[in-house]
Length: 57
Image (tube, rainbow, N blue to C red):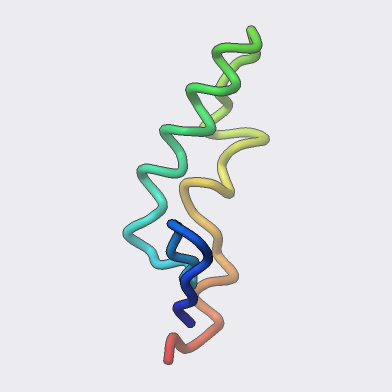
């Protein structure tokens, strides 16, 4: 999926998006004084085991 909306490109998530997305989440949590829990509540940002159950078209 890839759709243009005004000046934005909307596309399907890709595995390469994981690290930049994690960085954004980490930055926002830190800005609000919250801890980044890479082995706790935030671990699904780094790895989602359900991905192994689906075939990427």
